[in-house]
Amino acid sequence: MIDPAVRERAARAAPGARVVGGTVRPLAGGAVARYVEQLTLHLAGGDDRLELVRKEASAHEIAGLRAAQAVRPRAAAVPELVVAGPGWLITPLAPGAPLAPGDPVRPACSTRSRSCMPATRAAPACPRRSRG
Image (cartoon, rainbow, N blue to C red; front, top):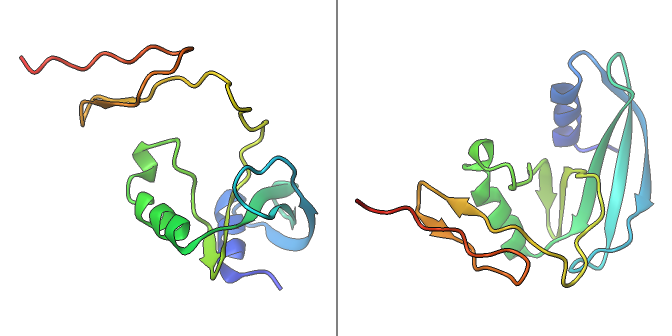
């Protein structure tokens, strides 16, 4: 059975399409969750498929992601929370490989809050805006 919120997400992704099937496969490389699965919904009447991720999540992670949805339209790094239940959540699949330990991470600056993330060896600290 497909959760109604997942069907709603499919309808937003491909208006007029309907879910006609799906597959589930485990994803490797998760750093925190004991299980991470890729859900592929097969659609008729629109795009061929919709790729989602279902993963184990703590109540704190779910609450934090729910709260972050308020800024998601302005913060591309915040994933869409499609649906969550006790101990799990579903988000859209972000294709690509996860960062390996030691991979360089670019700093994230917010000019609104004038805050920066700490620098790494590969990425210098971002300059704070002057208050003048």
